[in-house]
Amino acid sequence: MKSATVIGCGIVGLTSAIKLQEKGYKVTIIAKERFDKTLSNKVGAIWFPFEIHPKEKANYWAKLAFEEYQRDIKPTNGVTFIPFITAYDDKSNTDWTIQMPKGSTRKALDAELPNGIQKAFISIVPLAEPSLYLPYLFQRFKDNNGTFIQQEISILVEASKLDKLVINCSGLGAKKLCNDKDLQPMRGQILRCKKIDITSFADSTKQGSLSYIIKRSNDCIIGGTDYLNDYNLDVEQSDTDKITERFLQTNLCNQKPEIIEEIVGLRPKRTTVRFEFDNQYPSIFHNYGHGGAGYTVAWGCAIEMVKNVYVK
Image 1 (cartoon, rainbow, N blue to C red):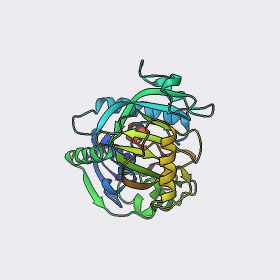
Image 2 (image 1 turned 60 degrees about the horizontal axis):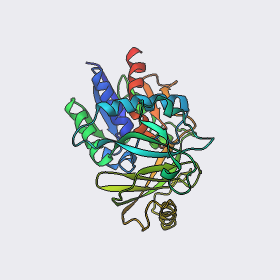
Image 3 (image 1 turned 90 degrees about the vertical axis):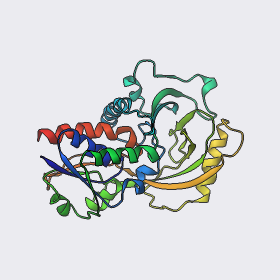
Image 4 (image 1 turned 60 degrees about the vertical axis):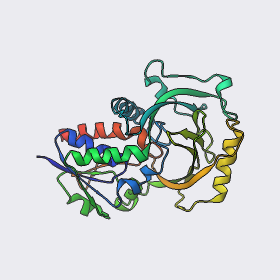
């Protein structure tokens, strides 16, 4: 049986491992942390092509992932399809709307727009709640004879010796692993709040003033921040205040959200996703740098990655 090792146990690592298993590989995941300690467990996890480049590839991966989520709705795995208002302006990537299923996307009416948003689409998109979806994927991986090893891999030469095929899905960890100067953190602070009965939305048109709410089965995620090259993992009260203020300014709710938890994570932002074999170590295929769109493109990247490595 062919074997492969995946570095990383977030959404990109798990989907990559599962797609390799579907092609007949015996797969091992090696990661510094298990899925429940990764960035993937901290995020809102809605399908939304945010801060990921190049846009043509991102849109293609997002389309593949959208179709995968349609096939992967189970009663308890956290995958649902919900209405989502997406603000846009003249600089926004709106090409993704062209590939949406017929009838699933339309321009929002003025009366449907949150206060402060001038133009938006309303789409029916996948939501994958991490607390349910990541354990489901991990168990799926284990049930397919997968092996998990908790271990930090710190240099590429060490990674190259792990297997005949190694998929690097280490996210922000690739900065150290690959000495990648193009990779930088985009700090996100979010509020997990008691559930509010309003339509989910995102406005990413103003750099530094990211605003969104994601309504989940038992709570809401209200965000956020998008600070570039910021390694601060501490919860900042000033950011909580800004997030709350921006939310109230939408006029979607006339009272302050009831905060359950404040969460900070660092998105792996890169000029373009690194999606290629390593020049020096040809056994390594890199799949990292997905910015704020990990859940949006992970399945699509995994599907294309398997095609690349399977032919090689």
